[in-house]
Image (cartoon, rainbow, N blue to C red):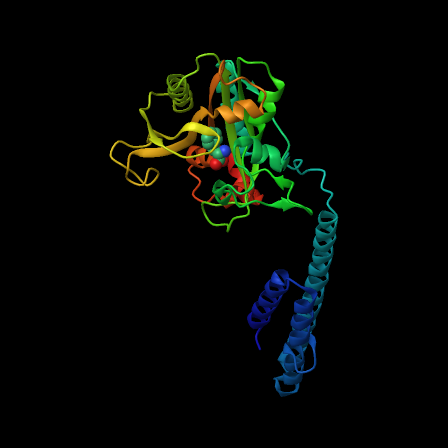
Length: 342
Ligand code: PHE
């Protein structure tokens, strides 16, 4: 064992100590160097076999090695204690040097956004915004809309009935507010009714038990299908910022006569795309001229007044607007989905 060997051993041991990440590791290093059968013990054990002249120097060297290692361990232990204390303080949550946490920002739900946008468009055309109860009477949801108890059109609406007796239900559409509006308002008037509707349907990517519609109702003298078409074109121009061709197909709803399905040219393509299912047309809304029986139920004289009504699928418009392909996302309340609208 030469002096340089001792120096090298000391440097290596002290490096290992300084790199030690835990007290356990320090104990291990201490054992390996200073313990029974450790490095220093080996050196001391070798002394009797050395030349007498060397014994003293090696003995002193071994001792210095031992002291150096002990000192390094103590220094490292102090460092580790200080780090542990700092970590504990941090875990307690106080570090005056940290910037404050960012404020979480809320955002409007996509349905709220589109509802407000449509309300802006229609109020600028002289419409008032109405609402009505979500728990509705059979009378308003069906009967007064020309759908009596045994009418096959009831099959179109998978209804959530409330309680005993078939009188209370969750409204299956916003149309019951047509009757409430007719009863309350003096024609001529224009109204829209955005709101939640409910159907007891099997849920899938395009069917949800809770969804949104926006009813439109215009009543006055000499209101015609021409007004209906003109209104929808104006509405589309505002919504998509360009003129879109529309077409009417016959459609059946007991509360309108004639009844239509109104389609608009796909606003996203020219030759057909996935949104319009390659047809270049998108189904916008069912609509029609208010049936005289409905006007009568609302206390309005059908000899004097006519009107048109439409039922915009608000959920569908939201999906079109934000390219959402699964209606269930809209009401699921998944924060990861909602955060995209922040
Ligand atoms: N209320 C009808 C539905 O939800 C849609 C509609 C509204 C049809 C107004 C015509 C006029 O099925």
